[in-house]
Length: 312
Ligand code: TUI
Image (cartoon, rainbow, N blue to C red; front, side, top):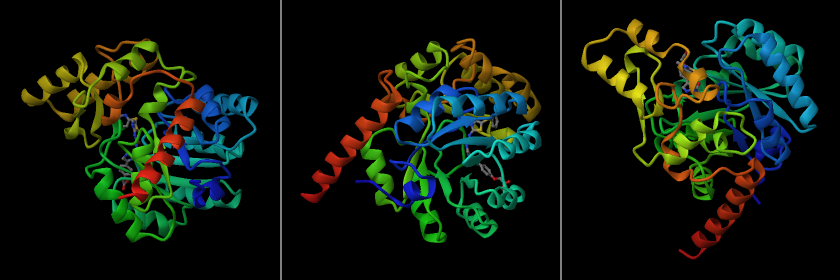
């Protein structure tokens, strides 16, 4: 059950992809998700190419299953990271925060699957023309850098607009969300926040606990003025961003306040003044469990949901 064309395309058991979260999605998490039958992803974020290459080598030691690297296109090291990922023959790349068009043909030549995250129909169509293998339609419910549209509005519109498989992301954390995404026409799901709370995730425990403590209204989008709005857990930093907005702060003031904050949250565990990026489903994440159990529980619940729906 739940075998879709994404499973065939990526050579994985379940059409479940782990979000490539900067600093959070290290080799340990990626390997655990891949070993559990999903697609684990290393988040390159703003890291230098050597760091990313090292994480790739670690994953290769920890699993013989397919895995991917997420390339954050705003990274100052993007060209070198692309080169490292190419040289390491990584099976799949996902991209965020931009248009990966100019890299598609080089990766196609070596059989690396390219799957950009898109926040709109226009970008999905453009990406299809560039020859990508699938797109991830990510709604504004997700954590980190977000677009405007919700998953429930975005996914079916992207599905109708392109002929390549669509993966849904944003606001998905359990079997109900998984089945809903399939009902919208998606062929798979990508989840980030719930995998932060995987046992194998190396993020600081304070980061995980901030997600576990958060309720349904526990996140907020900050920094719209910068052109790169980011959803984070409401904390002291979020209040500082709020103050900046009401006092007419400039985009530069925002960038300054935000510098290094993701690292301090993930690595140092500063849940007060760090940038604790997390999605709206944080209120549904209540425990830390192994990646394998996250995936198994989700698939079992999805099967139950399908049975329930039959009787409606
Ligand atoms: O990329 C993400 N999520 C992220 S990246 C990130 S690191 C960061 N930190 C501060 C500011 C900005 C980034 C944290 N979370 N998700 C995928 C995603 N991509 N969401 C939205 C987009 C996107 C936005 C615009 C993709 C393409 C795009 O196109 C612009 C263009 O060039 O056409």
